[in-house]
Image 1 (cartoon, helix red, strand yellow):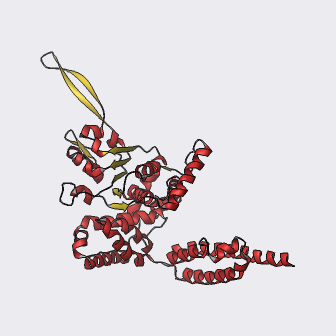
Image 2 (cartoon, helix red, strand yellow):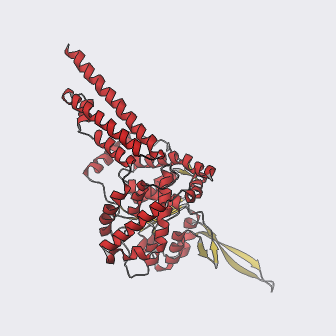
Length: 403
């Protein structure tokens, strides 16, 4: 079993590189990238709530491009008016000899399109024609589709859907909505994000033909991650914390979260996604830091997202998360250290003091950390030490120039 888990852990850096690479071309779409990768590894469907024009389809397609051999199929669901249009690639006519010496004609459908894809993106899914609802539900379940009286297995790895609205709570789409395990609200870029978008587009245009993706996965590697995922350890502590979170949400708003407590299927699938998140981070057991992805699983209306995030935030704190927050704050743009390293001599002494305090705090956190986190905190500590030496060199340089 250890050998199997190691296969997945060894693939984590490649998966991280793919996500980072996709984000260089799809600015501000971290939620889409993470949720889609979680869907690929866990096998659970993902849904994105957001207005048109915010690059939902393009981001998912960009992930598909970085999986060698993956087939991507996207459908504007209101335009699909029959099951054949969704899954039949072509239809041929065959002549067969009849018993009476004549001939009979039979049609033969070649299954393809959504039924041949590894990643399916169903846009405006709640406006789908009722005639294709059952097949859409079959795709979301991932167990194959029903066709011509048989169940046809498909190569589907991730079913991803999107819309700018949610289904009517009392409508016939409830079964499909309940199976959208991973849910993320996607908002348009803010002012800074839009400026960065323009700059990135100009840079790509000026560079000419795009270079091939530098980070890729193969279909076999994705399948390996999916096979390894069930072996990621989930401790009793993580189960208890998740149950406590459920209880807190229910106690705070019984009417709003009664559905969550009643949905045992979703509770079980929470751990599939937690396992997937740990594996994508190169870990063999689910930790408290993984609980953050529950913000994608525990809401039913957008108004609940803030409440869910607020309840999850304190549960996710670990020595590593505290260390990363300390590190990010230390090197925040406009901070004392940033100014000192940029050449502001008046800030150098204060910067050295901050470095020393940070080294002390990181050392303490390393002592409190688990084995998996110690190495990462040590890397942060080494970076702090390196930048401290740069600041010391700046002080010495400033003193020499004043002589």
